[in-house]
Length: 121
Image 1 (cartoon, rainbow, N blue to C red):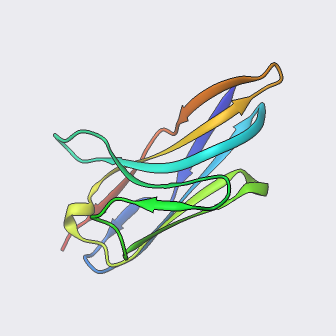
Image 2 (cartoon, rainbow, N blue to C red):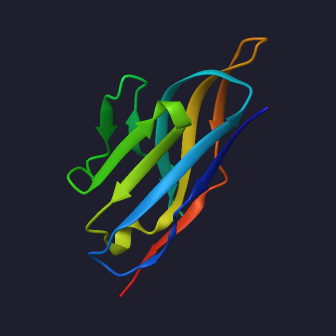
């Protein structure tokens, strides 16, 4: 069984910063893409940022220049540094990973439990 555990959410004023962390554990052979998604109340879940095993990153247009995704392959972890936060960034943030579990080897898409980020004046 593979799990993702997130941490780092909280309350912050506009213009502030937060850093989210997500660590994978369990029977893992390798981890491919890792990413962060978010879901605001009444809205569908959306991609925030994704990073490949080689370190290439892509971002949603709404967060480009403000958020930075990174990973530590040795720790099986992914991070999201969020700067210049805006009220519209308020959402539950979910970690996601494409994992090869095992042995026995099998492909898994794994989600974290979510962590709340609230940006308010």
